[in-house]
Amino acid sequence: MVAAVLEVAAEAGGTGAYTDETARVLTAVIGKIGARISADAEVHGFAGGWQEAVAHLGRSHPDPDDARVLPIRPDGDDEP
Image (cartoon, rainbow, N blue to C red):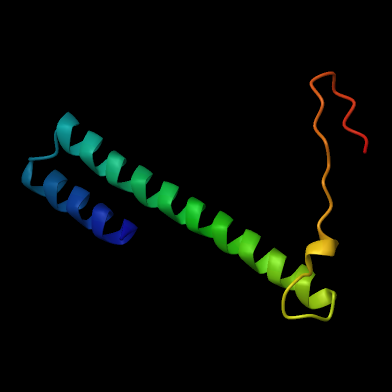
């Protein structure tokens, strides 16, 4: 996708049609692609880490007793 955007930019530049608006649109396209890739990587990374942790327990899924609640206190003392 990035290669296609660069190709469009090069073609627009070669024909003299590369404007500020063209630059803004192509930059927005790259920004959207980057954001999507980042979000997908974060979700897949979390899911992969979760699956690895559960597999480490030797089960296909965690038991409710495995859950641990950690309180969050406004004073910054977050120790359980």
